[in-house]
Image (cartoon, rainbow, N blue to C red):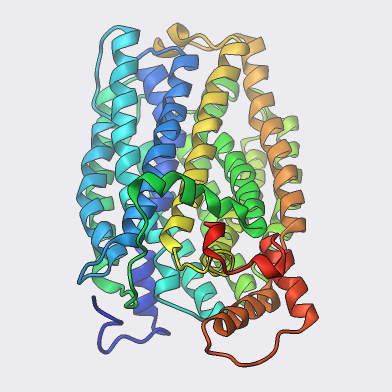
Length: 489
């Protein structure tokens, strides 16, 4: 297995960019799916919203099987490319093919359509797992330094934001008629090719450190994978992940319905303009919050961005009707987009450090397994958001027959869509803010964890202080005397 490639500097932008390229796929794929997949099923194919919304959720149940297995496989694999890079290479082709298959127009009975797209979504989700579980676990095996990891995560998030911009704008330019299924398929092909290219660029430009594979039997994959949740820091991060990303998924998942059915403003390029403002502001927010996270504690952007996002989202209540000021909606969307960036920037910057916390608990370095459970949580957030959106749309009387014919929904349904679009994300963001306030892992705590790991490995002969013991217990949620023990796996 190769160490760092010759003539490659850890501090070079080239190295950071190579690492970040793959998150054009990681950040873009779910923007396309959360914004357009349910719309594709309901408006273009006429599937009932309650059925369409459950398809991603079923995919998440499947992820409960595949993500722990993939984390186990990656941690126990030995390859000359590095185990994670090997699966990134293999997964690049699988991901491209499975993403395109999701958008194949299949006209049949509701039952046949439902089963077909459940299968297609499961195939896509498996491809996503093969790439993103190893990718999310790659940085701890590339970089050790706290601030350098933050710098790499910042560049990654910039590429993720760029992927979101592409994923938000290209479909709006290509899908002129949101009831035309073939236009969605063309979008799927374009992004399949793009995703293949960027994942291969990450494979070509990254490296992994040499280390012994973790020998865990496949039958123990699930028990050991879910043991990651023993970490208090990881549990709180997952709370932030589920609520913060869930709020974003509600916003993007309902954006087409909100603009088309509530504002009656999908045509004339206005939806493209709205998505452009939202996504470009996210890109600017990535730059802003990435700079902050390298100078301050990594969770600080969350504490700033959530209040801004809640206020801007609630302000939409005054403009959620046909004929309202589209300029004001664009201004509020700008602030929402900037603050959305704080969530994504922070989560992945923190995630790379939690592999060290897990190692302190278990005595085993298993970054891919930690990554697998975070990737699983991300997918659960998307799946739950999609399912709840479908159920809530059905509850407010959304009529798929009217939708597929291009007709307007009833006034009651329009008000219901606006309420869901605004109120639910605000509830989720409030919960995410509370989890963030309780998160214990800052730079000082990270350095204490790293030092204690060196002590356990015999690389540091200093005596731990009572303060350091307390920090280790606070970060892990486990008594100090029980740390670094294989029984915790």
